[in-house]
Image (cartoon, rainbow, N blue to C red; front, side):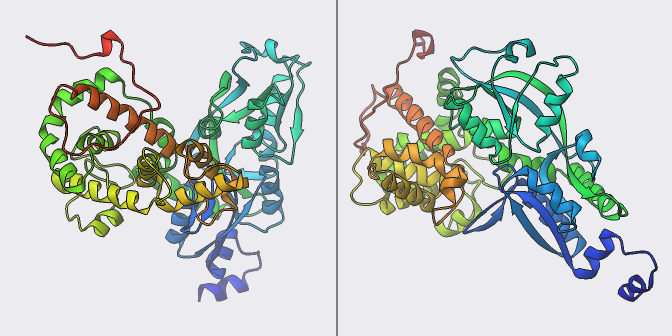
Amino acid sequence: MVAGLIGTCSSPPTILEQVLETGQLRVVTRDSPTSFTVSPNGPSGPEYDLVQSFADELGVALVIESVNSVSEIMPKLISGDAHMAAAGLSITKSRREYLNFGHPYKTVNVHLIYRLGSGKPRSVDDILERSIEVVAGSSHVDLLESLTTVYPELSWTENADVEFADLLSKVAMDEIDLTVADSPDFNIQRHFYPDLRVALDLEIGDPIAWAFPKGSADSLLARADEFLISAERSGMLARVHERYFGHTRKFDYVGTRSFIRHYESRLPRYREMFEQAGRESRVDWRLLAAIGYQESHWRSQAVSPTGVRGIMMLTQDTADYLSVEDRLDPKSSIFGGARYFVRQTERVADTVDEPDRTWMALAAYNVGFNHLKDARAIVEWQGGNPDSWIDVRKALPLLAKREWYSRVPYGYARGWEPVLYVSNIRRYYNILKWLTSNEEPPEVELPVEEAEPLILTESEKPQETA
């Protein structure tokens, strides 16, 4: 009946009516870790999660078209190829001439990026003689243009053939002096390029929103606003942000003094469980305890926004695989985590010797064994040694770069995460070995040779008590 009424109306159907009548919501987005990626496990990304939920609420199928450059998005909307864009777009004056924007669902900071050692610009005056390159069609062009009212001599180059990650790489490689990047892009790429630094914040709290073509009724935009406001109130927006961006702050070292304090206050409750799991799995209990600390800081009731739970932070799928009925039960979690780590160790190629075997198993525990396989394949392509952790840890972060993840079977992964994960666990394991050095040696001792020995300052060593 509704379709018949639409067909008899003299005015053309609204975009929302078109979506409901065809049963499809066509969305253009960016192929980027901050928006949308595809792996063998299917599509993912913060924009995908949100727009898929919106399509589900409308009761229609989601049809995604991803583009490589932000400059390709506006033509897709203006031509009618897409009903809307969900691509992390800033609301700019130039875009408002052609597009309508919905409710801002997050904000980002806009950074001016330089390379450590090249001289930090402390004001716009300091960048007038330096080379600046930005992505053509991006909001960064509008931002720089707004600065020319005060700094008319400011100049820059616009490049339509690159993405934000490419320009950050060019700064790191000293090919250009400066670029402009939104905080989510920078927070991801800085794991690849540790010499990148923020020189200036050009804008704080830049609003990000979905975009819709002008010249049609705003019915779809209004429904999208209702959805996003509801998602904000329900906590869905926060959960999506944590799932995809929480890792950028997750792996900071807690600090030796905090670790020692937790060793004294928290570990005694679970130490016997770690020791028993170590005996049964033939793994040094201190390594299992280090994993548990990295995962949960030895908190048995830990729950992450993505649904992993317990001391060893097992996913539901992993718990089912290990026959762990209650992930919040500390003994079940510790024994399950030990079995899962042993399973990853067994899957590592026989050609890999210790201690590299342990480090690769830890990486697989974190990122998944198939992504570890992809990283080892990249090492082989590069002429390195896939049995060497040193080579593999250099290749893992490449799984977040399109030029590499598009070539491997299991696709995109936040590959810097397992590198930091292993590094942190090695640090905690070192401290635990030092703290227990005067005790009876454990029944099982892994043949781990530390390439990065821990050196504690006097202030970081635990003080003897009377």
